[in-house]
Amino acid sequence: MPSTSLLRQPRAVWATAGASVVAFMGIGLVDPILPSIAGGLHATPGQVSLLFTSYFLITAVAMLLTGFVSSRIGGRRTLLLGLAFVVVFAGLAGTSGSVGELVGFRAGWGLGNALFVSTALAVIVGAAAGGSAAAILLYESALGLGMACGPLLGALLGDASWRYPFFGTAFLMAVGFLCIAVFLKEQPTPARKTSLLDPIRALGHGGLASAAVSAFFYNYTFFTVLAFTPFVLDMSPYRSGAVFFAWGALLAVFSVIVAPRMQERFGSLRVLGGSLVLLAVDVLVLGYGDHTTAVVCTILSGAFIGVNNTVYTELALGVSDAPRPVASAGYNFVRWFAAAAAPFFAPRIEEWTGSVRLPFVVAAVTAVAGAAVVVVRRKALAHDAEELVTRHATEDSVTVFAN
Image (tube, rainbow, N blue to C red; front, side):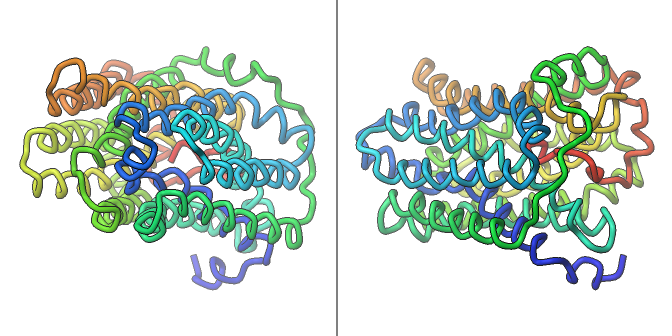
């Protein structure tokens, strides 16, 4: 693909991609400042971890709503609605006087982010020049850049006050709102309106259900690393931000560049199973190693997570005959519940057992469980899997939370 196909895009595409970067930054933004938030609001790690739980619990439920909304009011209005929610609730989060208020505002933020990012890829593909391949590469690059820069922004602003990253996000998303309002024209609404139950019905397909269950176990591991590790590392916002920036950079590189090449050589299911087992080993070493080992393993986990994200996305979108936006919504509805569960249970497992290692043991077990589902259900998952080895998320998909 010529580089000019990627770089010569309409302003509407750049506006949406830029806003997508900021939206993805919001996921890891709080990582470096979790200890600071706990100190500032006199909260325990378990209470602060609810910032992730409320965010992703609403995200999971909202997956049933996004297709329903966008198929009725159009892509542009859905993007603007989501951005408006993020601006309001991210700003309110910075004014929180208690951890309960902050958790509630993060829930509203999660709803806005779900509405925005679940629509962004479809909008980028519809408006991009150079074909769907260029559009998807732009979108995946925005995802990787956001996941890498979120912790860095959180560290830079959070070193002065834990409130500043929330205000900074609100400001950046307000700029994104204005850019999309000015540069993006209204998108045509789909010919068929999506029902709230369509994603649930899609899970009746054995292959899609298997992918969702395996991804559920994997996401528990993923978000144990993302939400619990900052308390274990116990570093300053700057140092923690640097660690998770390196983590996000590896995630981006392995998701966009390495994973497709590995799939082409070994096949999707082998790559996924092997990567899950390696992630389990990495997390186990993270829990039992010294501080330096924990830092290295945290960064290294980004590589395995990047590979897993790409393969899971493609499997979920290609394994069933359901329309891809519907299949993606059903798949994400299941797996994001694990993203809500892990931040809740990990610190409580430490509290109940008195062992900081056991949450990582549980995370390693769930990664192996995800791999076991891939092995046991390989026949159901193998449908179209070989055709997926070189293909990223396709043009009519809504895949954002699969990454």
